Amino acid sequence: MNTRKWLQVGLTLLCSLGAVSVEAAPTLTVGSASGQAGASVTLPVTFNPGTSSVASLQFSLTLPPGLSTGAITPGAILTSAGKSVSSNLTGSTVTFIIFGFNQTPITSGSLLTTKLTISLGTAVGNLSLPVSGVFYSDPNGAVIAAGASTGGTVSVLPPVPTITSAGTATGQAGTAFSYQITASNSPTSFNATGLPAGLSVSTTTGLISGTPTAAATSNVTLSASNAGGTGTRTLTLTINPPAPAITSAGTATGQVGTAFSYQIAASNSPTRFNATGLPAGLSVSTTTGLISGTPTAAATSNVALSASNAGGTGTRTLALTVYSACDLNQDGASNVVDVQLQVNQALGVTACTSDLNSDGACNVIDIQRDVNASLGLLCVVGP
Image (cartoon, rainbow, N blue to C red):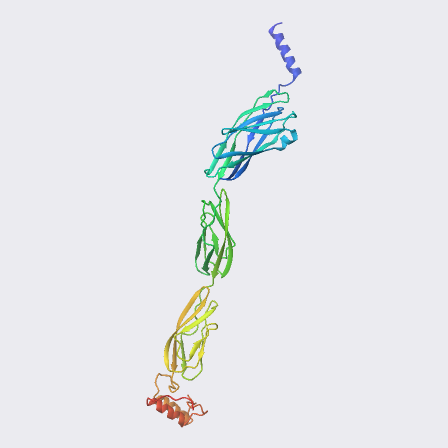
């Protein structure tokens, strides 16, 4: 038969058989896991038989320093296929063998998981577990060519941050505030929730800053995170009101023997008052801020007033002059001018400036007391 004839026969045979198919090879994929040093992790292994009928297989993983093996759990596809899994550790290489009396082919999905323990002291980073020695066989025990296989990775994570900055802080409404979140184990991000109005946090640096707008006490949740997780702590943040500013007058006058009162007034809701350097006969209510009493001696005093709240203390000096009852015009001296004021009243010209003996009338007796005081004698008040 000539060459032309052979070509015709070949073409006819190909047409009768149809297109030649190419089978897809099995693939084995070892997954990834992560955890801190000292922890145990679970490493998944998945399988895809492609178009092959795989009844049993084996493969090996090489463990890097810092990893040790633990329990092996068959995946769903092995359970359904009635297969068993065993392992053998030789040096740093663990070999997995999957077999069974039931030669049912293994389908695609979860093949197994293996527990690995990360040794204490293992450095942060990625540990590679290369796969080798992959072997497949069909239900008749014939070898199936291995396809692509992918090794696994275990990421050793840093310890979770622990927040080390103080659990309490104070600020004042209307005044710039800052608080630095600090934490161990190299955080890469920060946060703070529940901050009072006017404050915000930098998630990059952990600095809480701003100007609070109102007095309040807040329980702020601080957090610091890295690849290993997030550490938290509660910050009790107290924003105090602005310190009081005293608004009442800086001068006042009184008279010996006559009841006196002066109310300390201040902004920003004071909760306590005080006054030091008061003349004899006067006292202050630290609750209400009222200075009251009856002065007993003429004097000029520089009284230190104060009004306080949680935000601080405001102060002011009160120039308080207490005049003698016989110093009717309050010029600091008992003299003929004061006598004349009493004489005028006695003559019915003006109202009585001071009824010195408290008998209900301004008359010669009161004039005599003024005259005595103007001559350097005591100013006698009352009967």
